[in-house]
Amino acid sequence: MASIYLVRHGQAGFNKLDYDQLSDLGHQQGELIGDSFNARGVEASLVVHGAMRRHRETMEGAQKTWHAHGPVVENAGFNEFDGDAIIAAAHSELNITGFKPQGIGSHNLVQKTALGAYLAKQENPNKAFQQLFSTSVDRWVSGKYDDEYAESWNQFTQRCRDALMDTIEKAAGKNVVIFTSGGPITAIAKYCLGLDNEHAFKLNESLVNAGITQLLYNQKGRISLASCNEQEHLISAGKKFLTYR
Image (cartoon, rainbow, N blue to C red; front, top):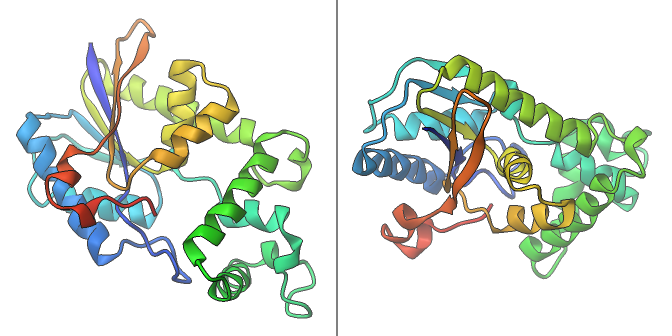
């Protein structure tokens, strides 16, 4: 059986208007991924990254030292879900009155400004964000409000499965590395293990930046989860490299 390595992006721009960029630490985490692949002797016939900047930057960090791979392709099917829009739909109290009549979900910059202003007032911004995120995701995955989202939970998980199947077809039974986000990794693990939504998102909360998840597959359609959220390459480099956002 061949392997598919799902790599979560390095630490991104939390507390910045543009989250979709790696922090300085995130760039270093990308390089640690490359070191890990070299130590493991990972050779990939294909490298895939989502269409987000943080996916590409993480891949580029790994490629500074890891060169044992074939062509690189982009697949937006491995993009993260729109967490800001999901929070906006669940928490209308974050709207900026009079700035955009439709609320914070109607404009990306307005949305981020409103959320940032709210979090800045909290005693613990990270904890406050996690609480907002958790309640918003619970609402999203419930399926009760699907018409309020541009992409429902079921549509998102199907998108991720479709991207995985497309990649397996292109890989033709050889190893692949995919640079993506925690949401697609969660959706794919849910598919492999048959997890319900509640347990899938418990897994999601544990995923570290630059963690590595390994799938095994064959061309007869069998896909299994061999390992999840590997982080030894981060721990061995120092405690500061173990991050979640």
